[in-house]
Length: 412
Picture (cartoon, one colour):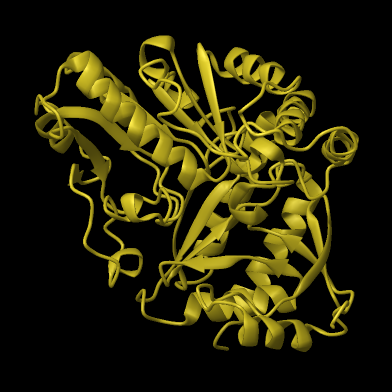
């Protein structure tokens, strides 16, 4: 029996031999994390510029969150929802007060939270809006990413998520993202119960909509009695420079979907927030999860969110995001390899002047890793760059130096 890994190659071979091949990781084997840093099994240190897809906004192994984990794990970890526990109500009140909703429904993964939001919107459409049974429609945006369950990929335009996994669930209408005319037309359908969007499309390559798009979307939803379902799993919890990305336009979604950094990356936890008129359409026995709302997760959520507030991580993300984009725009002036820089707060991307089928972005990320910075391409020619929000300005500049050096030397 193997009890410890002795080399990166051994770890990679074990995963290749015994694990499903549903990921294509960079050839780096990590063993420890602290704040903005990760270490591999050989002891090499890296800056983390992916943050586990924005799950570790508070930094790796934040001591306060780890303390909350250990303290609660010694007392009680799981009861199921067959009984009450003494931590869930505290967490529910905390997130409702923080984000301004009547009710919270805790689940585990982000995909599970999005599935919950779908069920809520449909049930509300039938019981409150009066849509005929089995006729409800949810409007979605092209290039979205909400997860990979069979229901969610039915609303996806990504061939890698869909090919070979049909038949697909009906009830979704897909429109172009950041297109007000398309919104007006789609939401006028009386069978539409929800508009399900990301305030910034992260997985698609950090597509930031035009100013005012989210506000128009919210106004049109109210006009047509449609629920605005905002997936802030990647963009929420201070990542974009405010607690929620929708806060930039003072938009308050009817259904808010959160996950990832909700636990500071310590364990899977997600939540759906809504007011009573929406949340209470689901009755006992109609939805649930054995682990959803477990006391361990509940205790961690409160501490993880309090860390974000106490350490002013939204302000840090806003300020250092400006610094980072300024440095990357300066890099654009030095090379044609970087075609575009976009983002908000510390959720950013550089678009490599190459086709999505090219390996340039992948090769650059391999070189970033060789120089001590971890990032990952998305959709072939886009590199998403999202460090933990505890990063300092000095560290941001050091990381920009690494990125600039690698990009300028590429193909020389």
